[in-house]
Image 1 (cartoon, protein in one colour):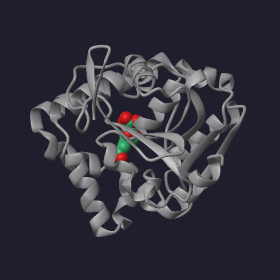
Image 2 (spheres, rainbow, N blue to C red; image 1 turned 60 degrees about the vertical axis):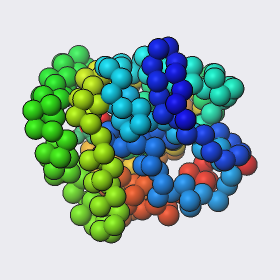
Image 3 (tube, rainbow, N blue to C red; image 1 turned 90 degrees about the vertical axis):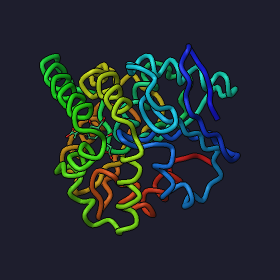
Length: 265
Ligand SMILES: C=C(O[C@H]1C=C[C@H](C(=O)CCC(=O)O)[C@@H](C(=O)O)[C@@H]1O)C(=O)O
């Protein structure tokens, strides 16, 4: 369904009954991102999914900052009558879930972050990443989505995708290709890693239970999440074997079991 909040319109899906679990996809993803695991959950969940700014059926809605999207997400939950939800975010969606929890902790029951980060700790790193993401944005607008997806799939971070079943890899590519150049460009410029606040120094303030999930083959984010776990007060870090950055696709059975076990009831 379409939901208009603070002058912006989002695509939101709200299905099932049980604990409210809000799923947030990664960069180039959409609400279908977690289809590989939602059918594997044993516990009943009320599954909420939102296409992030610039993605899926939300599409191009202008440059939306992380703080502004989190304010919109709060308004969406208010409209749905949800006072508290658990959040599961993958990569960009994990950065978003963490940002929402930092800004609106009273709305968050539990937090599951897959291959995420709290942003970049120094201004220098943030500015360098902003410049890099600006370049990617220009690449998108000049070369189009298909050329960008070819580039994006070739990143070393996704080397482990070569072991994905052909049908899974094909579906992931189609999901990425379904995006628009404008939308992805706006996402990079608004919610890119370098544009969001750094939460590194505030992680200890979060009081809700936190589950960090990374793939054994994703050294970069495994190390980031090892450091994050040391700063949270109630965090568990699970490193999943036979998986890289995209654990929910590379080892969906284990991922679903970990999520089931972390959610109460
Ligand atoms: C390439 C790096 O950063 C990007 C990697 C992962 C994030 C993401 O959402 C990818 C999802 C996917 O393609 O499956 C993305 C983000 O957080 O926005 C990062 O820009 C890197 O080496 O840090």
